[in-house]
Image 1 (cartoon, helix red, strand yellow):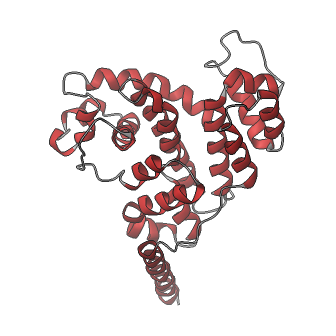
Image 2 (tube, rainbow, N blue to C red; image 1 turned 135 degrees about the vertical axis):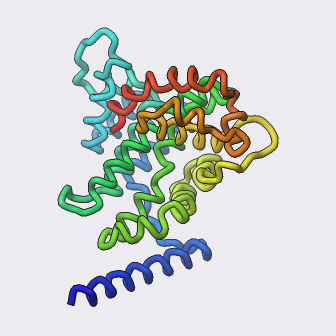
Image 3 (cartoon, one colour; image 1 turned 30 degrees about the vertical axis):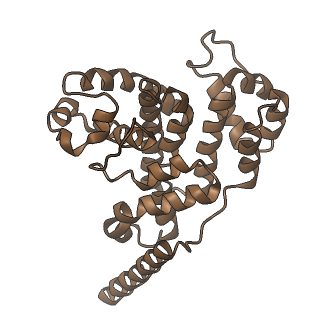
Length: 289
């Protein structure tokens, strides 16, 4: 009986994978919309005439975001004086547009791809969320310290969103997460993520970076771009959790990771760059997780 159940589960999983492959190839994938309240907030953040008072009133319609904004405003990074902030208007003014935007995306994606702790995919989702925030922190640092300083906010958004395809596939296939993880995640996650990001109306360069994130040997003419930043940030993120930083650096095959060269990294400076970037990661993770 158990054998039949396993066979049946595998058949269902294979049907899911075949259907997903077809949807991706036809660009006819069923995509969840970005939650309305967060869409309105992100739209308002693009208005150069938006007042902080109006933004604060909009944020009060999203209780989870209110909590996140207050936590951010009271973090060591934004509240050096240590004076507790309890007013959402003051918190929004303290943070500014960029930090509010990133907090909004972080909270919205958590709500979209959530599940109870009893779910077999809960632990995997939590690991993905930590990886997303960690990658976002590295991406922000790398953008600021290269020729992409003006794209620092987009770099952080790219890091926050680079795993959304992974979230989508897992939550759509929660009955057989291990099977799907083994068969499809690295292959299809970027394409699904790109489709989601395009559907949500985020900048095209973010969607392209997410789509190309696993092509580590890929390169391009011209200066560095968000794709280079995301690839390097993912590599730094893996170094961060590996506990074997120097070994990973010594194992780099530089001709197979042109993104590092694009960002000005060389064998004689990459450890210094990594160490400086890693210094801000934990604080960003405590803010956005």
